[in-house]
Image (cartoon, rainbow, N blue to C red):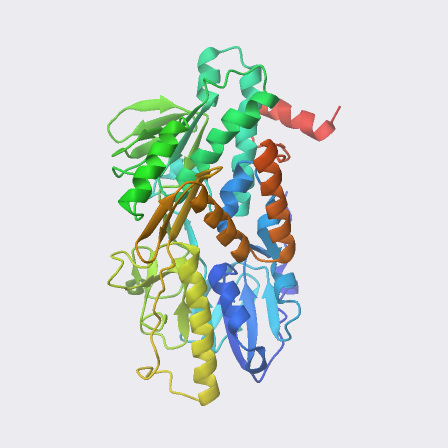
Length: 457
């Protein structure tokens, strides 16, 4: 019988303070940039995140496809904020918010706040389909990325063991749902693995049988990019041997067979889910404040109707006439909103201004710095301000430079740069390990494989 933990012996252990207390939910791009830009002298900052590290999400796909080690794109919250005086991190799950009491509720207690920053980000959206949630592989977190990488190599190992041609064909069929930046980048990386890396490791497999396919509900890849970028990305993917199905929706997936909305079916070794996201909502706030799975915010990034609760990044629906569905779900809106809200709150508190009336303050304005997507070595597309659009090596070099600059921590930048250089010259992605096998309850082969990993030679 499993013993239950006595939660009464735990508490958040946040000291009382005479400063204004700001609670930040989520340590992603929004939370990180908020904390870095708020002066610590006037505030006590408390960060709640279920992970004890910040993840550089744009490079998750490289962890998933063996190009980078997981620590290269992560940085511990305590290291990032360790030199700051009145900053406290707690690795807890937030259960909800009580706006009347101005408290955040966690599983080990509640904590009052003066200001609340909700920067909880987004989660995969399976549109209510439990089978897709259970059997597909999303790419929204570091555990997602390592699980995806593990599954890729488990499929390859199993393909070398099976005597069934049909089973081998299934195991070597990788289907990606969603033709946005994530889908395009994963497909490109898998294609390069198939061509340059895997044949050296799996000499007994015929990689002409390995299929990489993107399923997209629209009629193009990279919806939201310019037609020039979309057209170039499509041509590059086709040249790399990636199959594409447009105007196609997935209805179901049982772990082996995909069922499409039009009734067609096919088997695959894994389904990579990149078809949509929804905000990671927090319990306790009025559901009327939610639209499209996000909190509707005012021009100052406050959740409408709440003077002291702000929402930034993917969780926020900021209405902008340039974007029909709100700001794009990329890093820049979260970064810019984090900086903006930090400066706004600091100014309001310093001058003792009334929070009910911010008409004299400048509203948040998103500066679109352009869009970048990489498809593989020397292959990328760029849409930049001033109607600058280009592709190929220059776009790829720009993509690499921008990502290195925004990656948190000197060590991470150095290790990532060195890994990229090594991979560039010898194609030898080093992280091809199965450390924590993914097991199915009824799968004898994978259970036996796991035993081998546990016991060694």
